[in-house]
Image 1 (cartoon, rainbow, N blue to C red):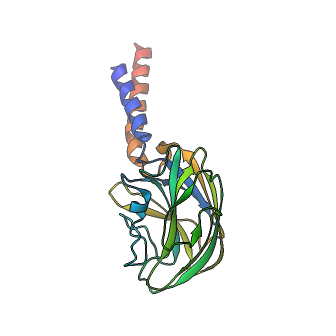
Image 2: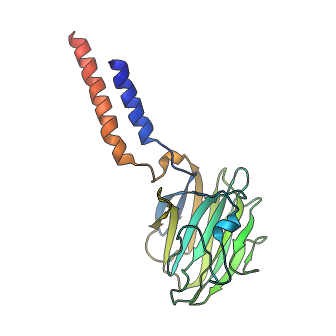
Image 3: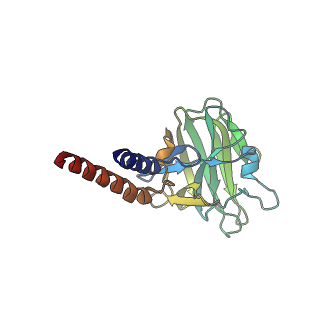
Length: 232
């Protein structure tokens, strides 16, 4: 009986720590920090980004773009590289009727990183890790980097002269084939920092509340069994 109760408690603890798909990273901006789970994709990063000149925008498999916002995401793809991850940034949403612009400088642990995709050739310099983005009311903008070292991941995105951007979001898989977006503070940030790799068990995708009753029940039963043993 005691062994069964102990196994129930262990099962509950395991459910509490069940890892989500993809590694977990952190993103900080406007004084707030969030956990971000990487998307997983069998094809290349460029295929995930899916830029089309018909729409003039990225066309990711899940809806990540948000109007007048900068959206960051992590990606594990066939071209991300060993010991590395891909990092994406989408600026604005297509066909929302608002143009915009921003200057971007990326710094940090970037050895081996390269540009996997961007909306316009030459808009982002992969050697200098600097970009100058301008988009019209019809379109959006952005860039996706391959081969970003994730041991440890440490990046800083510095924005200057931003117009048409009023928020920062991070995107993670929602576990149902879509995306969950989390806003970091209020307004557009001058600096966004990305870090990692935390254990996937810390992902916000883990159904933590559902594990608590099972864990509590197992521990309570174990305690009752011990008490009966002492009385006997």
